[in-house]
Image (cartoon, rainbow, N blue to C red):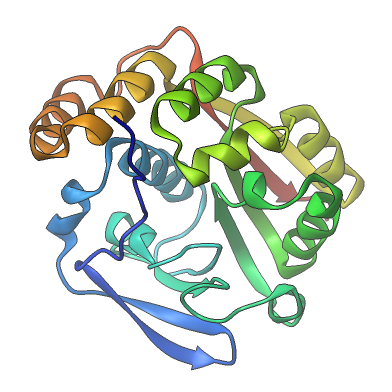
Length: 237
């Protein structure tokens, strides 16, 4: 049995167009973040925790590829602007016209064709005046990605398989060439992702209960093989 697990807009946040291609995220119900799928919650939560540790409260952040702005539900003390080709009509040109102290991109890089990734990273680093946070599935998870795609045929995972996943060292080197000092983190469990993704596919009616348990009991536990890489760049004066 296979079916797509499509990204759906969270009812906990709305986007209000600010300027061409960029929208301001307005949180309606912060508690709705717990209704996100396991993998989406985990990557937004972990990136948000790094942001809170490094970025002053009240700061304005550009979320590139942020879809519905769900990151804002994890960052109540910040102003989140979203640029996304699907939800805001934002494009590479829109990114190039933006200048923010802080820029984040969560699970967008792997959905950019490999030949265009350098250009995408250049747009991110040009838009970022102080810090950027770039999150993506770790390249060493490719066997797990292939298994999940074989069993679910999800088109989002297909791009993980057909297009080589980003290399954290290549991303690091790109940021360093752009004048950033780089820190890299790995987090989240590949085994939990595989089991939860398959459960969402074959039994979505019970996946939410398992999701809640995993988030409450195992969100911050140490992991063996990390699912995600988070690359953090700090602009060097």
